[in-house]
Image 1 (tube, one colour):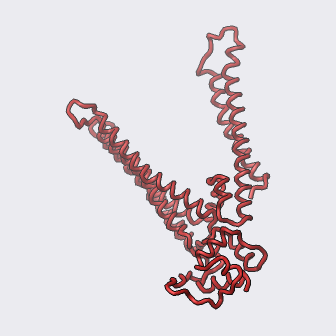
Image 2: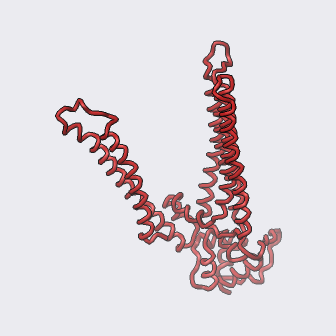
Image 3: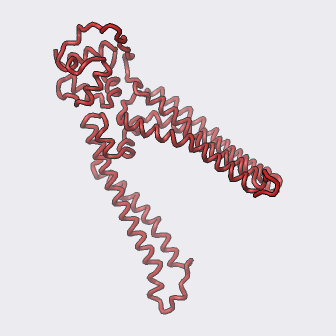
Length: 347
């Protein structure tokens, strides 16, 4: 009995598709297809992972006949995986939904903390104390609350990327249509909330008695609008699994990519993308350094070439050209990035 026959039997025993096994192993479906066609063999890390998934030894998986094995006493019944189209077997959707709650909640918490701080500006808790102390405390409390959402979310996302550098697309067109519809409604509601906040601040006017209330309501409504737009925007973005797979090369370090449990074809693609991004970053760095040198030259050359250096005008024409050099450099970086990605053979 060959490894291919054992693998096909173990998949059928659990009603598992090639896509589902590929997602559990962090490889592409084509890799599993090649294994079962005996065109390639998985590396040791994938074989060990399969032994854990199918509850067998490495020798049994590779050389023995598992089609007629009986379950060991006390062994758990193999968990069936639903048949049919690819499904989320690595928790990708749950992770993305948690991110879509935590990130907008973190941003909203910071805005609400600032709103409460501005509302109580000048209010002293202790008689004779600093009237700005309460405002600063509330703003810092909002920042801390926001970071309590954002930092764990970022760490969880980075850990998920390292564990699952490749995810097979399992979303249907109906899933994407629902996400687009929800985002459209949230976008309208979010913009309406922001406009409502603007109306509040204008309606309350600039009177000292109402100005703080207007600013507070503005920030609260902005927080609500940002929460809606960010949350449902992220829920829409989660359905673009191809973008997630592409972003792995940008977010992970080369060491993480080398240690990731993915097939060599996908690893090579990620490394090439990483190298291409590094080249783009290097070229843009050189462009911005040259832009800075040109800007400094335009700023100071007229000073040293003039017979009266004391007539230097820091806000005159030479200073204007100094600041223009950076936007021009930024535009050149954009052009260079587009050209390098278009003609650099990036995959």
